[in-house]
Image 1 (cartoon, rainbow, N blue to C red):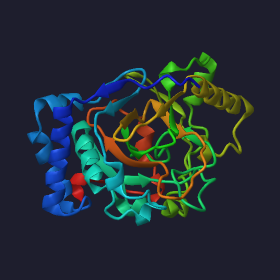
Image 2 (image 1 turned 120 degrees about the vertical axis):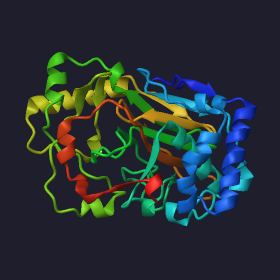
Image 3 (image 1 turned 60 degrees about the vertical axis):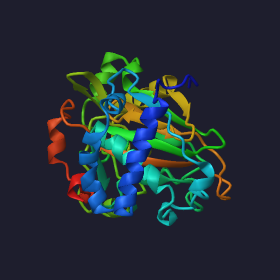
Image 4 (image 1 turned 90 degrees about the horizontal axis):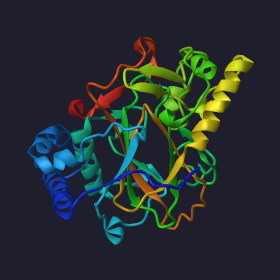
Length: 329
């Protein structure tokens, strides 16, 4: 893994202030970052933002598949202590929920899941007691294996946004683009075949109880823009797969590790990840549970006009999970 940073797009002070002030106005009017009225007002308010701000927040298609938006400045003391679980966050950092929703709206359409974090459009990622060794955002002591966000679902986001609230220990998020890997043609062809399923992760309790038969999906597929990926080895059962395919899958993991970068987010940084190109994870750390631990906010975004994913995805059951767009809230 290299520690070279992701590309940084810096907001100037006036643009950052406009974004924060607009979020504060929305929050004051609606009273809550989860208000249905606030969610439906997002595109209206987004359209009223300056051309300069909207230009700064446009997505960028690069081989890196990620960049850091920098220039926002949350007040560490004003945030209060890092919660011990997403369900106890309440209104903590609500202003930054709205900031992240505005950023998401300018990049596409924010989505939520009925089976994760009570259907919220902004998730809180904090280490939680009892979850240290899980392969979810609540873990800490284990490597969070690089993965496609919500890889089990055909309606997964095109973009993943991670906004840093607190990271005193400079704990790194990892990221690796499939377009920087170097796989043999034979491995590429094997991994484009639907051989193994991807199961829902532990954060989706309802989906994990779904009774439908898991459908095998390809780990790699071509799009008009180039090679894309759907990958979550922690939730990909390999039983019944042939040795040649397992070897190709293992080499994919090795290549992703080789090209991986480590990004230590600063408070206010928003890491924007292309979920079709880039897998993300997190290095292990030891949580203190004293109110000073790492705290991220996460949003998922769909983007109209993106290259089409495999047609077979239209027939997947998605383990019974339904995505909700902010405009439907």
